[in-house]
Length: 369
Ligand SMILES: NC(=O)c1ccc[n+]([C@@H]2O[C@H](COP(=O)([O-])OP(=O)(O)OC[C@H]3O[C@@H](n4cnc5c(N)ncnc54)[C@H](O)[C@@H]3O)[C@@H](O)[C@H]2O)c1
Image 1 (spheres, helix red, strand yellow):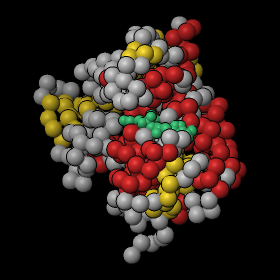
Image 2 (cartoon, rainbow, N blue to C red; image 1 turned 90 degrees about the vertical axis):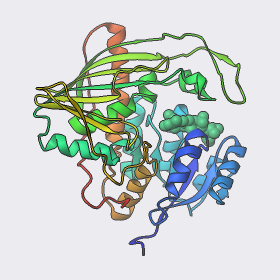
Image 3 (cartoon, rainbow, N blue to C red; image 1 turned 180 degrees about the vertical axis):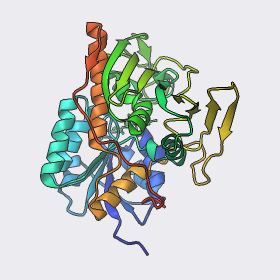
Image 4 (tube, rainbow, N blue to C red; image 1 turned 45 degrees about the horizontal axis):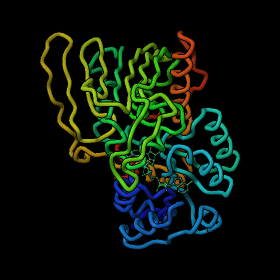
């Protein structure tokens, strides 16, 4: 028997990640979340997702969702431009919100969302939830236990194959926003900031390396578009705790730089900042040998459990506790993206102004157990 009634969610934005990730994984936690309905500006997407889920209400408009007293929380899975206005409208309508990343296009908008949620006593949470993965938590525990000595450097890399080669709406991701950092870098950045806290200052290079693109998949294949924001960014990060970091991210082609690596005085760890169960590697700083660390038994098989973030939000709502996927941390990630652009434009170090309290590791009994 569940300790509390599941929180009733509506998915708004029934595209790629709703179909592949959230809907199936939310249904894996019926004691915590109930998928009440679906809404998309393109109604057939909502109908298709409801059919895939085996039922659920299909809403004709966002206004209809927000006016429905049965709905407790919104899962905002629209594209970047939709995150801030939809989350704000949902909060104003008294709904809790879980947003896909980035939480907003500017850090000022994120502040507005945080203030609106606080004013109304509502919960606001934001993806990525990847730090909640079993492997990610295991490495965090090992670092804190001193297994690699004093950590000093962290490297993050998210360089995917040309986005237009596999995403049918690649143009929407590059139409507005901050840069590729806003969409792609949250994975390494959420891991870096979860393990090591806020970034104090950055130096960066941001530019556009593929200025003209063509959609290669989906119903609009063949459509030409020009990215309006930087599609490749490199950054040097100095954390408030003295750690140093390097970030490389782009939508312009793959890179074999490890996606996420932590170096300490005695050893290092490399793991995937997105997927759980992709494998952990470790090494000593006294030999060249790289060894695998056993993957925790409950980890997903090289996949991200999209359900954990909303489940944590649901648990936080019912238990009246802070969310783990913090909007303050999400705002900090947006500010990192903003400041990297600024540093690139002016050619110097830029200080960050936002801070957040780093989350605590998940204890023995997680809400999704
Ligand atoms: N696709 C992925 O692999 C992936 C992975 C992780 C995170 N994400 C994030 O998830 C979000 C959605 O990505 P996606 O790949 O599913 O995009 P998508 O384009 O496939 O789907 C977005 C859906 O939202 C709908 N939509 C957009 N604005 C809306 C609005 N204002 N009201 C109602 N519906 C609206 C669109 O019609 C579309 O069906 C993005 O922020 C993205 O960064 C995507």
